[in-house]
Length: 533
RNA sequence: GCGCCUGUAGCUCAAUGGAUAGAGCAUCGGAUUUCUAAUCCGGUGGUUGGGGGUUCGAGUCCCUCCAGGCGCGCCA
Image 1: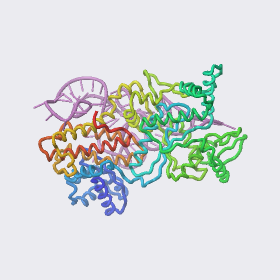
Image 2: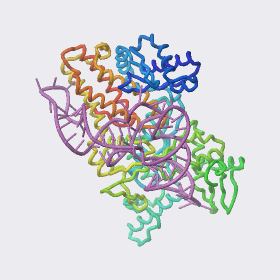
Image 3: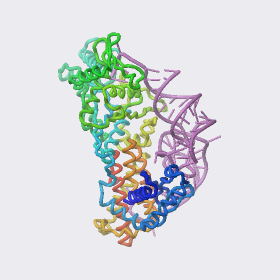
Image 4: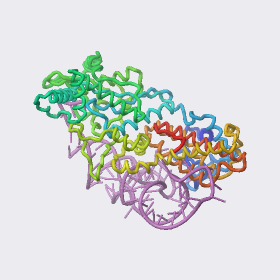
């Protein structure tokens, strides 16, 4: 907990000297000591002193602490800490002791968060774009829970409305065709082959159920695909249930009592423009049907009523217009809009044979997620999608993905893990008492590369915290690549298993700590940590 | 026309407002009698789309222009 120690020490000193509270961030930069902070800059402004002056004051105050070999003030005002080597080495013991729990924290303060993602219409198989949302959502859940939040995942099944009517008509038509009738295919119907397969199944089983049967089957298949992708939802909520409940009326009544709805042109409107939406929206069409807004508001109210403090929705870019509407709607109902966070996972352009593919589920042109998993694999696909910020647009060349599956950095990280496993196996074979690494003599660590590895390891908890509080899962795989690089470099330069038994045990402890962090990190992004490759 | 997202090395992408903008791929050159060469080391490669501003400090924030993507329905 050396980083925490430095942070606390600086915070405490700042408080004593200037009577103010400051958060302290530590960064690693090889050129400037072990850990650095820029805390003096912000204080300098308030105290009307120069950053160097402030940094010097803090440094002088801490200097007598034996835990630091040296504290330097950079020319511009950075504080650079040089940590006592023995202390750094002890961090390895800490990691081994914590094991699977290393990196966990309680920054989330048990905040109850619901993440809704994928939520694809039950009108066809999941496609490649869904994989991006799935990878992001599932990893966020894992990261948030590791960081002390209470995060739960949910899939909302839109099993009502226009698109389901179309699904029903499409299946019915194919069924009749198969029965030998000549029928016209519905306009805007779903053309995919899976529709014919379902119709065939119905015919074989002699079931004439064109609505609930296809929906159930498609949802079941979507779930199977997600499980293949290491994604499991805590709950599945059906739009039909929300519509049937008393919730819709509650929303209407509540809006009415707050004078948030009115009638115009035979339709019922919500005054969403009062809360920043571009314009008012229709809730009930003049033909009496609901638009999607009413059930969606009811659904979000339902989420809040289950005790969630923050709702996170992961949506595609074509839905960004939805943000203003939904927030305005919630505000009209008296809920603070900032409790709804909508993450737009930017689009995935599929490139095949150098050309962008126009994807339409309705026309039956799309690449199923299952095909991607067959060809690229779960680990590589997850890593590939997570290796980008949520807001970054992404051209996904499926041919290249297949071809470069072997060059995927995920294998680089996994290889580091497998390598360590094989070192341990080798050590055992050589008669090293591997089970005693817990009591290895850490002061035997003596090389800068060894300390460099430790410094990288102790950064992991910060990475998890940062990824959680900023909702940025990509920080984890990037960190893992860095860690693997540091490890491979160390491995190339120094032998772990060698003549000196004590040093062997010490280095085994170091690489085992590395393995622990690699494994914990891979687990956070739902990627496996193989013991051999 | 209005709104959201994006623009960083040849390509794909990083960089809580912090020190000399970093990785991978590609390319060029090296490393293994030893725990996995799916590895390591080094070289080449940049006016961070253009222009202004804010400040101790801007790839990051503000304004403006340019380019690309996506939205702007009583569809979801």
